[in-house]
Structures are given as structure tokens and as C-alpha cells.
Image 1 (cartoon, rainbow, N blue to C red):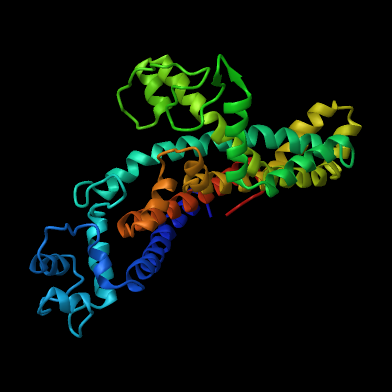
Image 2: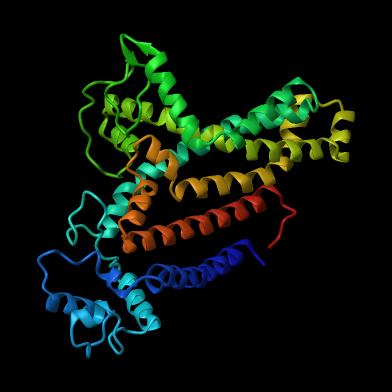
Amino acid sequence: MKLYEYVLRRLALLVFVLLALAALIFYITRGLLPPAYALTQYVTPRMTSAERLILAQNLGVATSSCPSYAAFATSAKGCIVPLWGQFFGWLKTVLSGNWGYTVLPGYVAGTETTWNVFWVRFPYTAELAIGGTILTIAIAIPLGIVSATHANKAPDHASRVVAISGYSIPQFWFGYILQVVFVLYVALNGRGLLPVGGPLPTSCAICFANPGSVVTRTGFPVIDAILSGNFPYFWDSIVGLILPTVTLALTTIGALTRILRSSMVDALHQDYILLARSKGLRDRVVVYRHALRNALLPAITIAGLILAFLLGGVVVIEYVFDFPGVGQAAVLASTSFDLNFLELYVLVTAVIIVLTNLVVDVLYAKLDPRIRY
């Protein structure tokens, strides 16, 4: 099978995966809750019982023969549309691009669509995820290489300590420690060197107090600052990412470092490495050109999973550092019963994970010509 045929087949299977996941999520968010919760995003205090009944019927939750809203709210016989009927009605609505309204704190019910709120918040999560992944790779790959080339020696032991620390330290605790250190103890002119949190800090020692504004073209603060030519805004956006991305990197480098070390140790004991050394090639060429390329294959899988996980919403980091991303919004949605946002959040996360795995498979084939699908 050619590579493009494999990609097309995986994309076709994605449709069925999302359909099954949508059914599962719909059952969890709608089937396990009283039917009235489906109206949460639309009901206002001024609505009468008759208006609420009409709303429930328009949303496909209440039957047209239901006599009153009270009967609907108590799930009287003949008042509730079967769950499978609700699902197909909901599926038809979302496929048309209508994800309903959100009731997240700060938004008036029935005024802001779930789709708009999600995509306004997603760029903040994406910046954190991409920054954290880049920093993780930049640290983990050198650590893994040094650990493998100095197996059971001091550098290997030091790398192991860093990896185990990353596994063991809770993200929220490490994030708070960094905030305390760089706000209270590492200060300049009476102000903390780095900001406590927020996507655009202006109160730290190295921040611009008045960065101005930018034209929102992409929703990504860093990219919009570059496109607008606003260096203070760009600088403050980068400074705001430092502590969150460092926290993400420390807590994710462990897996990537250990996987790369194991792969490198295995590769360095292969016959083709012995042949390369016997030809008189320098150690740098043997390690980086021959061993590393083969050892990267399992590491790519872990890196892809890390990126997919972070893009799905770094909930803890966004909460600790007050980033208005989708992870933070998902927590708020779960406490305010914003079913529309939770459904969209889970499905988008699933798409990200599946597509990331597909990209990883393609990279496998490109890096190792022996792999065929």
C-alpha cells in the first residue's frame, strides 16, 4: 500500500472514530443527566414555563405531545424524546456548524456561541503546547544522547535524576514554586523578574508596562504581534510563556529522555555502528548520523503524544498561570454544566490526537525507508 493510500484510509477511519466518540460523549453528557440540563445554555430567568417547553421541543428533547414543562422536567411518560432520537437531532445540528451557546462564567446565557468561545481560547492553549513541546524536545534529546553515550556514568545518573524528578513532581506544585522564586526572591528594582501569569504580563521587571495593542489576525498573541510589528507586545507575550513552558517541559521530559536513551543504547550496540567505527568515522558522525536517526523513531511517537496531550488543554498549567485557554474553560464548563462546550472540547481533542498519530506514522515512513504500510 502506498503512503498516500494509507493516509486516505486513516482519514476515512477518522470519521467512524469520531462518530463513535460523539455517541459516547452524548450519552455521558445527556443520557446520564436529567433532560432539563440540555436547556441550560438557552434558558433565561425571564422565560415562562410555556416558553421553556417550546424551547425543549425545538431542541428535540421534549416531544410535541408533552402537555407542560413541569411534566417534561419530571420526565413524565411520553414527554422525553428517546436518547437515540436526541443524538441524531444533535448530530444534524452540529454538522451544520451550530454548537449552541455557552454558559461559561463571564458570558450571559444565550449570547455567545460555543464555537466562537472555543476558538478564541484555543490559540492560548496552542501557544503553551507548542512552546512546551519545543522546550521538551530541546532538553530531552541532548539529555538522552548524553545519557546513552555515557551509560552508567555520572552524566547518565544526572539525566536519570532529572527524568525521575519530572515524573515525580506535580505540575501545580512546581508551577507555584517557580512563581514564588521568580516573584519574591529573584527581583529587580523591587519587582519580580518574571510574571506570575497571564498571556500578556505588564508588571514584571523585564516586561513592558505599556505594550500597546495588535490587530487580531490569527488569535495567537505572539504571531499577531509579529504581523503587527509590535515588539513590546511580542516581548511581553514571550515573557508570559516562560514559566508555564518551563513547568510543562520539566514534567514531560522524563518519558522522552528515557525512551531516547534506551533506543540510543540499543542502536549503539548494533553491527552497523561497529562497522562505522571500524571505518574510522568520528564519534560525532557515528552518534548523530547513524545511531540517532534510528533511535529517533520511538522518540517521535512520544513527542507526538506529548504535543497531542498538551494541545488538548493543559488544564493544570492554565489554571496555575491564569491562561485563558480551552483547558481552563473545560474545568469551568464541567462545574457550570456547559454541556455544549464539553462536547466540542472532547471531540476537538480527539481529532488532534488522531491527526497527530497520523503525522507520526508518516514521519516513521520518511525516517525509515524499511517501513511500509
